[in-house]
Length: 221
Ligand code: SF4
Image (cartoon, rainbow, N blue to C red; front, side):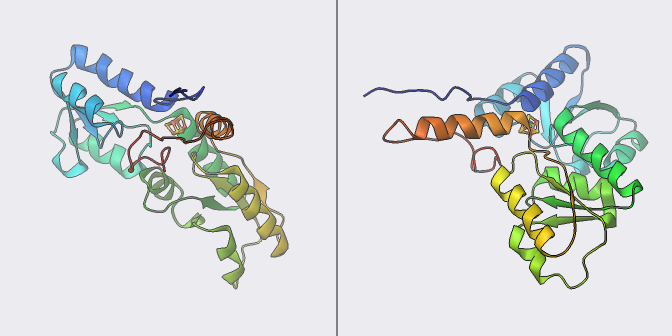
C-alpha cells in the first residue's frame, strides 16, 4: 500500500505562532497559562503542560500570571479582565483573525452591518461577536437570509477563517437576490484554503483519504 501525505498538512501558521509565543514566554516566566487549548492535539498539549504551560478557562486564570491568548483570539472584555487581575497578556491571536476584527470595526464606522458566515459556537466567532457587538450577525447557512424581513441598507459580508469559499459566494449571491449590494471581504485564511485545495487534489488521485485531526478543530471538520 502506498501512503501519500497531502502537500499541506499539520499545524497551520497561526497555531504554530501561538505555541511558539507560549514556549518563548515559559523560558522567562514562572507562571504561564493558556486561555483555552492552544491546539487540538492531546500529545502537543501534554508536551506544553510538561513545559509548565497550563491550560485554563477565564475563571481559573491565576492573577499575575502570563496568559497566552490562543490563535482564535478573544473579546475586549477578556483583555480588560486580565489586565485588572494583573496578568501579562501574550497575544497569540492569529493575524488573519485580527484582520477580520479590524475590517469589521472599519465597516461599522462606515455604516455597514457586518454579517459573518460561520459557527456561532466557535471561539473565533465568539471573539468577533464580542468586538463587533450588536452590529454583527452570524450566518450559519447562506439560505437563512431569505427569512429576513428587514434587511439593513448596508451589509458587509465576511467569513470565519476556516469557511468554504463556495458558501461565502453563495451568501453574497443571496444577499444580491434579496435586493442589497453587499461589500464582500474574503476573510478565509490562506492556510485553510491551501489545506482544502491539497485535500481535494489528493482525493482525486487516491482510493481513500484519512483525515488525522481532532473533531473539535474547525480545520478538520
Ligand atoms: S486563521 Fe488560519 S492560520 Fe490563523 S489560526 Fe486560523 S486556521 Fe490557522
